[in-house]
Length: 300
Image 1 (cartoon, rainbow, N blue to C red):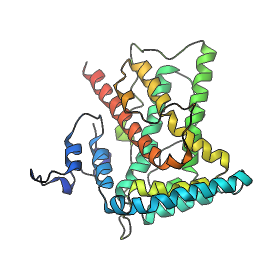
Image 2: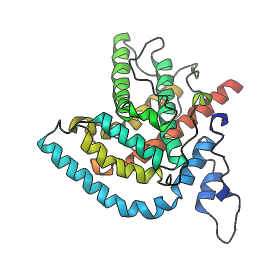
Image 3: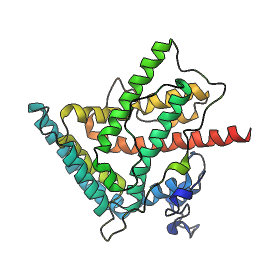
């Protein structure tokens, strides 16, 4: 797996340089474990972020207040479902927070997620409905400022539009997704995940999970009720996307790692923050799985 585009995030972080048999580091054990198909630089960034002090101490304090904020936002939208609705303000606020407060690892994982998610959907499209052109928004941000253009909202729209357009085209062709004798891996391009240098200011300390918990009530308040519900429910399409890939490849081991399941029975929005972390993990593992398959197909 190529890490040329992510050289600023070493696959062996400084905290993993020393091993004490009498005091083994859980993160070091997970870093060395190879059971998950995970791009090394992304795995190192995620583990570095997860072991931060903000994740350990700040998250447990803020989480109850964040979830109370979601409840308050839902009460407002119960009365006025379409107001407030200020996606551009929301995304500018998110971009400001990413630049000023989020850790480099958190920003890297967020921006990288858009790239690899788009590559996975292109892989499915290339093999399930070759030649069909989807009407989707481009997802290739390089820096936090790139999210200002309603990027998170467009990401959610892309997921549902992809599923709708894919199945409409399959029905038009009278076809279904099945095992492909020869897979087209041209969409899986780790070298195309090109990101700029992440902000490393004095206050760039907030980990990804804490940031998500803080942003979720803002998301619930500044988007319409319909947009927030769609965003929350999109997380459970992890199972749908994973099943598409399983049908095409004939391999199912990645399905056991999908925890956002059963999209027809949605979860409460209160756990959207945690489920978003699971969504990120599932996407990374699925992408790593496709990278491994691409390498095996090239060597066969």
